[in-house]
Amino acid sequence: MTKYIFVTGGVLSSLGKGITSASIATILKQSGFSVSMLKIDPYLNVDPGTMSPLEHGEVFVTADGAETDLDIGHYERFIGTTLSAKNNFTTGQVYQSVLKKEREGGYLGKTIQVVPHIVDEIKDRIRRAGKEHEFLIVELGGTVGDIEGLPFMEAIRELKHELDNSNTMNIHVTLIPYLAAAGELKTKPAQHGVQELRRIGITPHMLVCRTERPLPKDLKRKLAMFCDVNSDAVIEANDAASIYQVPLNFIKEGILSPLSNHFNIKIKPNMEKWETLVKQIILPKDEITIAFVGKYLELKESYKSLTEALIHAGANLNTKININWCDSERIEDVGAYEIIGNSDAILVAGGFGNRGIDGKLKAIKYARENETPYLGICLGMQLAVIEYARNVLGLEDANSIEFDKETSNPLIYLIDEFIDQSGDTQLRTHKSPMGGTMRLGEYPFNPKDGTKIKKAYGNNEVYFERHRHRYEVNPFYKTNLENAGMIISGDSNGLIETVEIKDHPWFVGVQFHPEFTSNLEKPNPIILNFIKEALNNR
Ligand code: GLN
Image 1: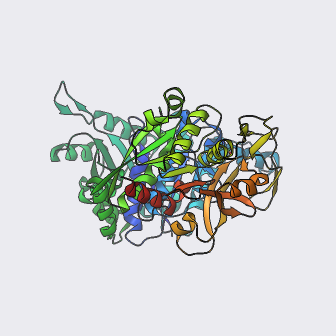
Image 2 (image 1 turned 30 degrees about the vertical axis):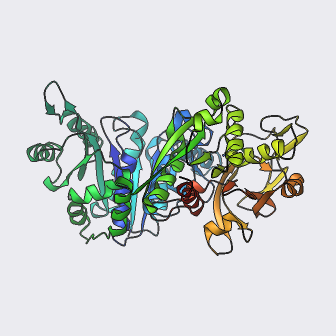
Image 3 (image 1 turned 90 degrees about the vertical axis):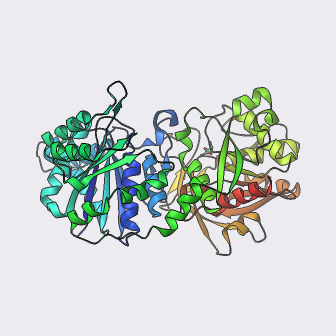
């Protein structure tokens, strides 16, 4: 029977519930259990796909093409498992299913209410996500006391009855602030958060205490007493040097005994490899600098998977990766060299809309002409093709129809018909709705022999990477591009997936997002090779 661990948060948001949940999952996974994770988002949007990155941070794309919360990315990166649409749901999705069923007459004339109908739908979704796993870690977004969180809390409470106390555990992440004026760590906010939880009928079995200072023993005892948890179940979570250090810190803090005691099982994680990688993140041997060219630099969260993927590659190469954040609009004003300077390699990330495009094109030209290792991801590949067409093929008005619908040389275009993952044909024109019209999720691609991409992956035949884009490279220009020295190094059923440049040490563009498949123990091969090239270029 699946065991469920529910993680709630109190006092305030941004306490690191996602990392806490992923760390507990990692400990269980490394102990040999089959573990999955679920993030519940109490907002009304159906998914974060249409939210601005400034509003929400990154949209993480799962293998099956769901646009999910960025915490799902953390989960995959920690537990190294492929998750899917069912591992993240929102209030919007819950209501959508219930209302659909109501319209179809599925409730046989009953009055539809939050209790039981919405709560039942939530419980079903939680159980579905837990199926076929020994553990499901469920992270509830938001903070205890939020109005929109109540139906989820009720579902957690009811599940304890249905599944039995021995199969469910509640972990509460809270804050122990330090008041400088009083010179004291304060437990009252944590106590209030727990009171709020208990008012709903949930008593936590463990407290994870975020703090900037070590918690003295008597304070832990006090917390255990007033929050009604076992005295060994108050876990200190100090700020860590790397998020990947958190599972190791939890183990040092003694998390294994309350977990084992609660579920009455042996938990013995093997963290040897993990520990080595974490050491190489914190005290690396080498160091390089990547020029990261993007437009949402105010909110680095919107590039979370990519910055994490760089850390994974660095950890595996014992190298610290410094990021030189290059605002593409500043490059437009000041010039590529001035901003990129002597970075060891250049990365142009994905993006939407035409803001900052010229700056990105300048960065790409700089990489091409100066033989600087270059990785272009999604928009970064499309722009590499445009730059090549403009400056090497001489097609001055080469463009993407995303930026100029009337361009006479649409190097990046919209294909009319597209077969999606489920085998359905999608029509993609400028009039099609914005939500859900992208090429999303995992598709196979075939790298050509003798290319840098093929070398990066090794020798297997077909590779799977994840997509999130609307436009494609126009195959009409393929021969011209190839004759001019651009290598089309990989394709997926006729769609151009990767490009390279002949006679350049390492210039690679990929239409997919390699960062979505990277995790600490298994970095993405393309990103790993990019970092190797940057190291060679020092
Ligand atoms: N805007 C481009 C497209 O829709 C690229 C998207 C991306 O970089 N994720 O095709």
